[in-house]
Amino acid sequence: MYAVLERLTVLLSFLALAVMPVAAQEAGKLEPRLKLPDLKSFRGVPSIEAPLPKLTFGNVTLIAELVDKGPQVTRGLVWRVFGPQAGEDGKLPLIASARGGTSVFQLDPGSYLVHASYGRAGATKRITVGKDPKKEVLVLDAGGLKLDAILPSGGHIPPNKLRFSIYEAEAGADGERALIIPDVHPDVVVRLNAGTYHVVSKYGSVNAVIRSDIRVAAGKLTEATVEHRAAQLTMKLVRDHGGEAIADTSWSVLTDSGEVVRESVGAFATMVLAEGDYTVVAKNRGHTYQRELTVEAGHNEEVEVLTSDVGQQGAPIGDISD
Image (cartoon, rainbow, N blue to C red; front, side, top):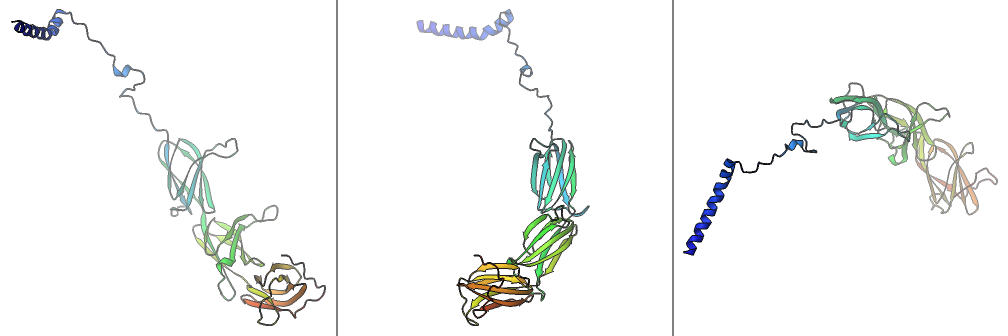
């Protein structure tokens, strides 16, 4: 009996809970609902309707041409973009750079200086960047120069013995020409601004030197070949013709005017000399030997100085250094 009454009590409790919200609303006894503020009114939470911030940079495409309205340079360029105002160090600040051909930069609106390097050729242009994309073309006014040298007979000169140096055509206030590129190898294309250049070709390391002025045309490859009137000689001191070279010999080569053009020490003395008349002097164990010789262009030879070729006592042969 008690169990039945307990179950009946539980059932009546559940019915009361189910009916109470409705009854309370009808009776006006339910507490009012909380009124939450709109999410948009919270500080720091942006409105969904608020516009997104606009980007501040603009796109500029930089193009380089060898000549005005010529084909675009597609590789080998170095682009540098500088700010227009110098810093405390007196230099323009580098804003951006790129390598290759045509390049696209994203820059804040404003004024800039753009420099394009193509080998030793280059051009600079002031540009203005806005919000709209734009293209800027730099005309390099440049060409290529390839150098080589031959002997009078058309003979080939070993590349490892041939070098070129390129100078400005006009001398400065000190009478010297400014060096642009030293030690240029033969058959290598050098990119230069169009104009005339002073080229010095050196065969060997003594006095076989040829100078010439060469003009580089814009948009073209200029190939220039100079002629060296020189020969390579190998000298040795021997007791008899065809004999073994005597070691520890000091060598000195003089022009016909007595000017020393080369000194060396060793059993052999190998050098390239411009054509002309020379005196070869060899010193060994306190004895001096000398021989007169004439160098013919393109005629490489081995020169023997015999121990019977004794130099005259007191002859102006110069000091021999190690």
